[in-house]
Length: 331
Image: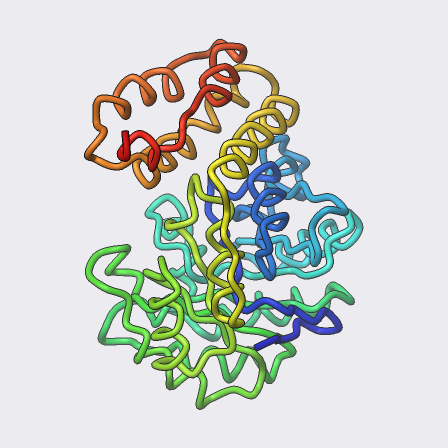
């Protein structure tokens, strides 16, 4: 079930989606360590990256633990996408991904992200400029279209392939849906029929069953997992292993150690208070997913500490003392 991005052979058919404020370097390191086929950076604004804005440089950060190193760029002008691609290549990226899928209003009102699907000719100028600017393989992430009256993903994918794009990812919703309703994996099938390059399907993939159904209905080569992985860095690799017929059990001790390491990395990467604050969404998702409602008395005080404390010693002690919920239920 492998697929390739240029010269990079990806053996595991599950990819961690780019998510602003979530897929920072500390989280990507953990996801890759647990066996994700590939991990993608947060969305990086190409003009801000070229201007050296500190937060965008940090979002683009990568290191040798990631293979391949994929940087996602967003923008509305060909010049800045070109400059961003050059900077990414000089910084050691292996792949540049173009964002034409983000539905956020602050992105689309600037005619970036999924707003580009309203004007495919303009979108193509960005794609062509990015491909021309770098020797790296360039990939493209999009939605089904702006709305259900303009489902143009297959047309954009076909034109992008002709321009040199080497892989396409499609989220099975339109921009106007945001994250409402259910992702339509069947609606990704026309993209599969329009292109020869690898295709990844994205949207509402939370389990092995979801992944298998999404692959079957879309005809894609791999799945991309987003919101379900927040706080659970092992999930992408775990689903990938199961798709390949392997068993990947992650023990409670491994989960606890992963969160501890991610917290350590986050504090080192951002600095004390910000590093702790960036972990809170992960801690909250972890508690919701891993601590059953049946032991809600354990949930509430745990969240109070993990999602409110700025005392790193208190946080580490809390994680070190975190008991296996299965044993709590059995008691």
